[in-house]
Amino acid sequence: MAINLPDRVRERVDAGTRDLRSLPGVRWVPLLNIHLTLSFIGEVGEGRAAEVERVVREVAAGHRPFEAQITVPGAFPSLRRPRVIWLGLAAGEALSALQRDLEEQLETVGIGREDRPFRAHLTLGRTRRGQRIDGPALDALVRRAAVSASWWVRRVDLMRSHLRPSGAEYEVLASAALAGESRDEGRRD
Image (cartoon, rainbow, N blue to C red; front, side):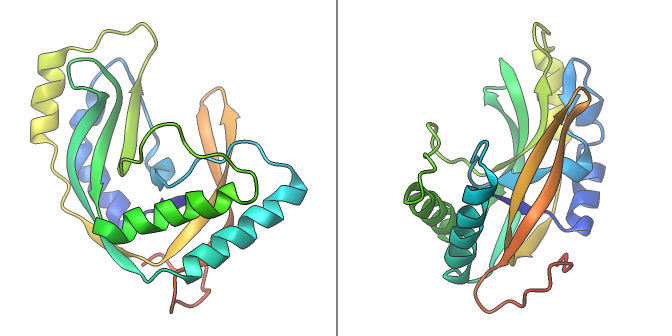
């Protein structure tokens, strides 16, 4: 499950992280693939996909739209030893409640929870295996990166990833409107 970004927010991410994304030794996520993962489901068969979609629609219908805002960049596990470079995301209790309810309800249909605690972020890139990243250079680029963007989250997307040698490609399988929103799946904010 994911929250995809409106095009105008993607444009701001591109502009605000362009210098950061020039750092060598990182496999950068294509801008069209940047999204907020709410829950990673893993491989499910066709029969279970309908169950998962039903759960996502029911949970989404119980939550009101909310505003999300991009915050500062960072890295997991740290800027000194980055494996994942990301942009933070703030959306308060509304996002936390949506993510928590999705995981709880998915558990009722046999989808396990994530092992790690949920931290709202947009993955920008992953360091290449065995590649050393220049810590001071990364720190300087992170300090200069500035993305000022917010948007109203109005839907949750059920996504499928296709793993390719060039990286993952994502496909939206279904889109579930949050409470009070139309089912206009083409709406981008």
